[in-house]
Amino acid sequence: MTLEKHELRAAARARRKALAEADPMAARRAADHAEALPPGQVVALYSAMGSELDAEALAVALEAAGRRLCLPVVLERDAPMIFRAWSPGEPLEMDAAGCPAPLPLAEVLEPDLILTPLLAFDAVGGRLGQGGGFYDRTFAARPEVIRVGFAYAGQAVEALSLEAHDMRLHGVLTEAGYRDFGISH
Image (cartoon, rainbow, N blue to C red; front, side, top):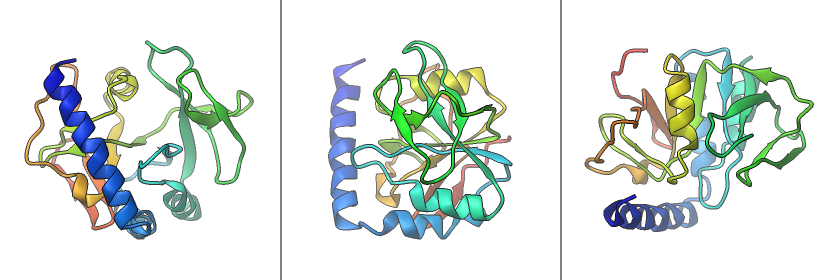
């Protein structure tokens, strides 16, 4: 990782933290746009950590709309994530990456649509993640799955420098609504 990318991530984390503090209701407003998401019967969300946009209200809206939910699980740090069935309120435990994940008893599912947290996104679907590569490896293993960022509108940047392994997002859902990047599914 270049120092430039490290500095970009640090600045993006600070921006996201400020957005979270300035607008604690952003996640609820973003959930109001759940019907604008691309189709997908099985939707992967995430359990928010730190200043990530909380997907709980979105999970409730998607489940009420009849979509099946799952959360990512890191079993090995250098492998693609798997996804286990989950509904709001069900217990979670820490996975191999220290992220809240469904219990091992939960059914393993293959999502049609993956919502991902991010630090920044640009107008052509570029995504700056935390740097662990978990979503990059997972997207590479499932290129047919629709990839959607879940973020604050203020996380948009003019342009991101993408690397060869970076897969662009099909869209992003923010408190301002759904934005499609025009990438074929």
